[in-house]
Length: 319
Ligand code: APR
Image 1: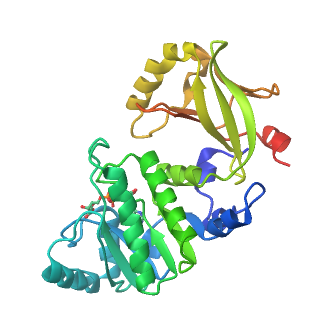
Image 2 (image 1 turned 180 degrees about the horizontal axis):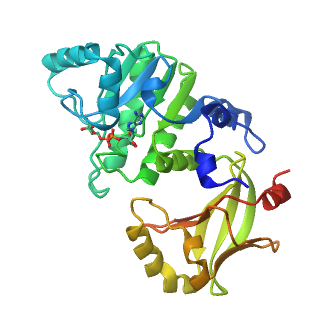
């Protein structure tokens, strides 16, 4: 069995090897082979440029910014000070480049992500511009390989799932129009970012039309995508039935209570609520190893995921 925890700790090498293309066109394949996901510390990555989620002062901070300055040493700060002296503060969305000091990378590209403000302050566009401007600056400096942290998803509070969508869409778009970048690595420090970036990369092969039950009532239908990444994760968008509203408050309340985790793990509640997912072919995903997760945010679509599929079930679809 593959648990979510085991999945999340798999090595970068393994992750990089997911790039498989049963259902993809050659063009998509080329883009896919240029993107990797890595769970870990960006200061340890060997690429031409690593990106820093900085603030407008460029003088360092906590999170990934602190880690980069600590590992890279004073030379980075020195360059940052020169930039600030020359242009003033670094604006949100802007990207600037410095030495990487003692790091393995050659350069650090510092970009200032948006502070999350409920989504009404053009945050998505600002975040997209951070990725775009960083990639362009990398190209301008002949960098062919670049590593990104999950910008704005720490102190700046950008919802991890939404940030992942922006990150993956923007990077994919950029590299599909430029042959100057050979590799982009998303370096995710925590499980949630890792999971959402991976989901956004959409390694899907088979679609399994299914129904979500609660207390033996159908509360939604979902075309679950069986991901081609060997991780035993099924995910898809839930189309709720009328009955879903009975459970919505429960999902949202549970989600808020579990905010740290960002997940609703329905398997915690199986006894009382009898949630289950049944594929239209009769296969019952009743007790996923790491849980059934429903991302019921204020805005639909509602995302459903089953984490940790039994090998037998996996084998049934994944041949
Ligand atoms: N490697 C990769 N990612 C890391 C590392 C690391 N060593 N350390 C933290 N992260 C991750 C966090 O888990 C988070 O997902 O980087 C992501 C971005 O979080 P922050 O570093 O808090 O950046 P951000 O949300 O953009 O906020 C920027 O934080 O430290 C300050 O100076 C920085 O004021 C600025 C603000």
